[in-house]
Image (cartoon, rainbow, N blue to C red; front, side):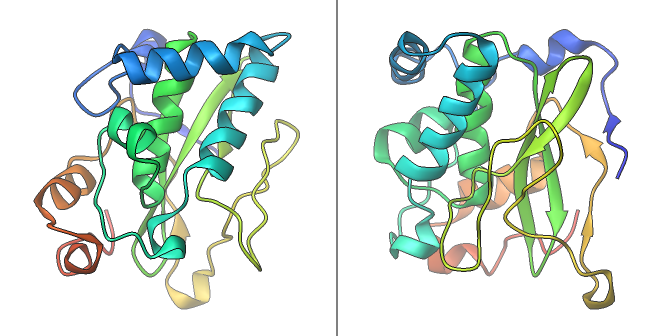
Amino acid sequence: MQPIQKNPDLSAYLAADEVIDHHHPVVRQTAARLAEGAADSYDYARAAFEFVRDEIPHALDSGDPRITWRASDVIALRTGICCAKAHALAALLRAEDIPTALCYQKLDVVHGLVAVRFHGAWHRQDPRGNKPGVDARFRLDGEQLAFVPDPAAGERDYPELYDAPHPAVVEALRAAADVPSLWRTYPAAL
């Protein structure tokens, strides 16, 4: 899949907003702690990915009913579904000036991931969280995502790289009272 950068202005993929709130103290403190042990921006990006993947449980896997959508809340509360975890990773990466896009797959529902820009190219990463049958890794030499869409089942990768979270995803997350109620309004496709 060849990614399509929706915004030609690369600085848009460093911006903060209400969802990717990388200026929030919780995000800044976490970024600073992760940066302490990093030798370079690649090492930092890998550490941030592993932090979100491994230290913030996926709400469905952990049974946590709380909904998070803002990056700082995902990090502070240590819970989120895939899109919320992608928001947290995007904020941590942008906090250290690493251009980061939001991207999506259509599985049973919309699945969120990120793409980081290194060496003049975008590289998709999936911080969803590993479990039996899911082994996502931070890689620049190919993708090792949580899921590979099955076109025969109507699944697909969306090629667009967004500078901000998709409004349909944010709207559903903001409106849900808890994870079980989320699935009544969460988008099945974009």
